[in-house]
Image 1: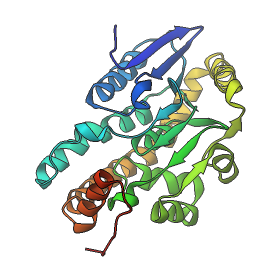
Image 2: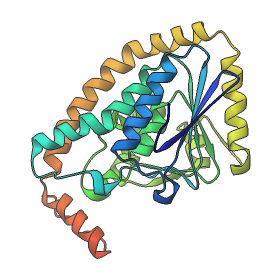
Image 3: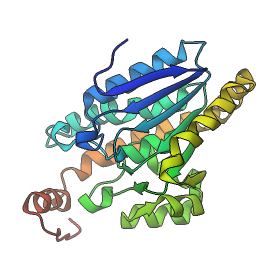
Length: 261
């Protein structure tokens, strides 16, 4: 099956997904959401694939959502529908896949790109990787599962600091605080990810599937609750003066002046 915005390769029991819009730093649009969810569904039904790698083409893993495709946000009901169809689907598809998924984070992993990485089971970061939860910079909050997954991985205190400040993390810093399992030289990233995926693919994959399913008994119900709640919060924040000021500042290439309204 062909895909427009990803490259899918299968070799020796490992399925490799490459987000492939390098000219846009692999910014996610609706076509990429459809392609990613579609390939994950195909993988779930393919007994030959026993482990998965997801990475990005060029110098980014995924730089976030493509702003041009976000649509009108004046109507809160449209905002709710957008989040369910755009952000929620790939996150839940990754978590629900009963095969191990290794994220090979090769560059920018921002916004939903960071959410995609966090939804994977294991993260290997290159020294060029940049993880960013920049939502607060535009007066909104993450609506792609990060509000639940980030504290789960690095603890409430560190997660709160990152979410409140919108600061970025390097690959080495992500490894230090547990966001990434390890950080490796950029030219060794795919080699390291493939070696781990091959090891998992040659392992007791039914046991791995059972382990992931057992972990998901708590994770998926709580993740779905968090997605629904942040969806509501996001629809409200889209209406605030601060968010509209941030969008205006981006167009005018200046720093926004937030007033807490």
